[in-house]
Image (cartoon, rainbow, N blue to C red; front, side):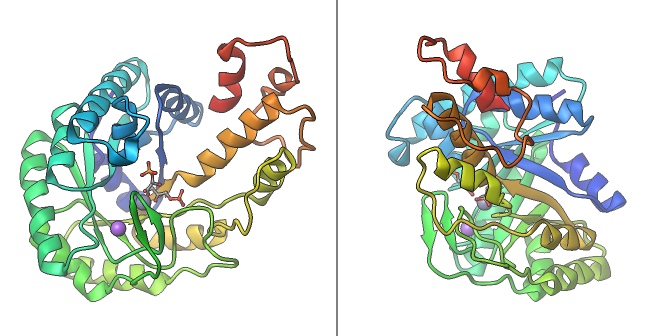
Length: 324
Ligand code: G3H
Ligand code: 13P
Ligand code: NA
Ligand code: ZN
């Protein structure tokens, strides 16, 4: 079934675990994310970024996607995911990632998203509160969960590029939850969007700890969200480059750093870059003259499909490796 994010957030706080949230830009990717969660018997969080809606709305020029493109894209992906969700034994959430403004969030909600993020992190605190509260007032009566953001992550975030990060001030987190009514909040505490996060990143765990202590003290429900959390597996980067890619200086968040923050209220961990890397690696391998030396088989068990077959031109043969 298709469900809102809220019950998953409650479960993560109650039991002290985190859900992965995975970005998708096509129906085949949505199907793959649901299938892998069925294997693990876990609820699935699929997220379409605001620009994913613009892309699926049918414009190659998605960076300049109009509201009408986003409306069409949201409608298409939500209809497909609703059908997959209805057929699936696991709960499935369709979440809007980095909603840009009230109108973009509204078209996602009106067309079937069950959870939305409004990213007002570039705004001054009071304006961020005002925008986020307006979204909550629209979303909650419709049963839709809301995520906000406080603090700025360095790197490429949607179409916003921030050179430097501004860590979230944990003393303002509680006030933000109180004034807006959001269910969860993206914080800036050392992660970054994209493949270039720096080597040996250390997360500012104390930001999450202080924020959660304040929430508990005031008796307010709230879950923290970790954006920019891809781990950028080095074997995938190496294989991608061996296959003709040119991805340099790529580093992710060490998995131990992510594990260490989960007990402190981080209940949703966003992953996009790792999927992009793995998908591109597998497409490159399928079409390469010389398959890569595999450091690991952990991308998936469909290697027999990936041998070079110059006579083959059926997309159904090279889409499964993408889904793997
Ligand atoms: O955090 C945002 C996403 O990783 C960016 O995805 O390029 O579709 O906006 P996008
Ligand atoms: P990555 O770029 O680390 O995958 O982060 C994705 C993200 O935060 C989506 O909102
Ligand atoms: Na932001
Ligand atoms: Zn993000």
